Image (cartoon, rainbow, N blue to C red; front, side, top):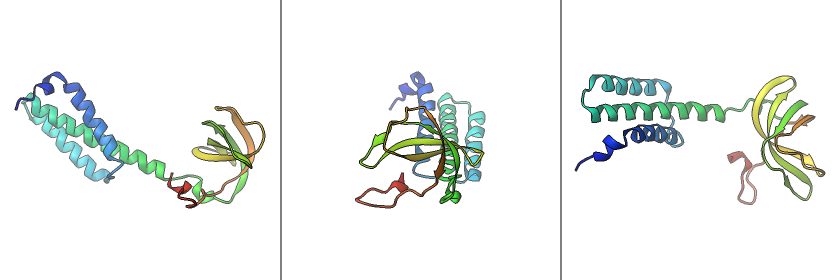
Length: 163
């Protein structure tokens, strides 16, 4: 079997390796030490090999491992919330509306990002609940006193905490 497409589409194969590594982070998260060892082995293989296709394979593996590491680090950062230990606290905040506002029977709900809470600069995604009235525009900034509440648990087959 001839692998003619490797010669013609080698940049796409290498980029695909990086994409596969980034996507694999959703399934598997490995420690940085293992990733560093695997990436170093792939880079050494790339340098040591003289055959073009083997070098391409080594480079693709190195970028896949780098993508897996990058994705794992990013997902770990997303899993940690700066505001979680402050649930139940009330304080002044600057909130930026990041998406369209949804109207329910009793309130307005909008995805938002907390920029500051009690004078501390943040970048934390939240669900902002407002009283009924005019909906704030997307991109708008709201300065208000807010109460931090935990997302609601499972109800009617939907769990806000799982998001």
